[in-house]
Image 1: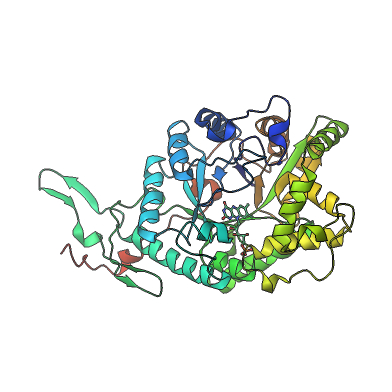
Image 2: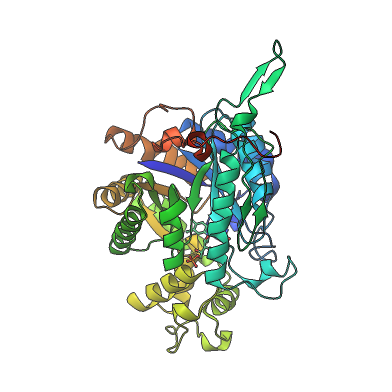
Length: 444
Ligand SMILES: Cc1cc2nc3c(=O)[nH]c(=O)nc-3n(C[C@H](O)[C@H](O)[C@H](O)COP(=O)(O)O)c2cc1C
């Protein structure tokens, strides 16, 4: 199985920073991120991952909300590790392909082939308002732009073939310009000539990760993603998502095994079940219920007065079709509440741990059993590990869950490769221009 550690300051539970001993400035502490990443590498994790959005995200009044820019932070982390993959989130709605393709190719060089890009379309009007817009572009349009963004990025990464750099001082030939290509892209959203100003990187291009689960999101993943982060609450939902995405990948002409599906799991660990349950109760006690209710109301697009803390969700909520932001997360929340007949207060507790990702409270054996069960029953190729409390939740996972999985033959004892692509068992892509070789127009 494959494991990614989702780095998130003091932990994924929104109240984790209020626990005794929490590192109150973890969000801005580079050394803290270095320690956690080294620990994930010692545990032989495939990768670490940073979420991101170009806006002040979260709730700065009541939770640490600072966000170091992911590619900058991962560049530092690349220099203090040797093997672990480094995945940064970046938006296709609020970037341009040339700049971003260049940054990811650079991280791939700096890290010796360990870069991954979590491709997101960025939901919500707040980010749009930082880029000259009043509202976000429509959901479908964001995904159309994302598809063209990936097409352009792919061409740019391919614009230098392997072997283009010759560096022969004797003959004076530094590069074979027959292997460097303009891309001459002209589409609906972008017009880009190329080539990139970074030679082909160790992995050919970074591992492409995707994290949206609407129908458009799944189609996008089926065409481009090599790994998918997803939030799934039940085994049945996880199995349905897994089968659907693998089917869509096959329909898109790809090997379904070339898309690794990694649901999120929020472990709340204790050495006994009672200890884990007590930690969960303590975390839930520290959640600010009214504020969480107001936030839920914004997500559900209702007035907070419609959400009584000790009643179930009201009828007449919007359908997924009416949501222009994060469609699949909206549906997940409403279905979770309805399926389990949760009151608003209970729903807030369930979302407090991992914002809709599956929380699992128990002993290391129980967590290992669940992971094994999901893997054996067609719901996961691995997991996006999101400890409720960091660093302690990760330390427990590394010390107690990982060895159990290793003993069961489900997880590596040692890295076999050096690149993220090799950890995931993904092929290294060839440049599309290698077959039809034409010299770059402006260079010839
Ligand atoms: C594990 C995980 C991590 C995500 N990280 C980010 C992120 O860092 N930034 C972001 O804008 N969206 C992030 N998303 C949200 C998705 O990219 C997407 O915007 C959202 O799920 C809505 O997509 P959909 O409308 O296709 O469902 C994440 C989703 C998941 C499951």
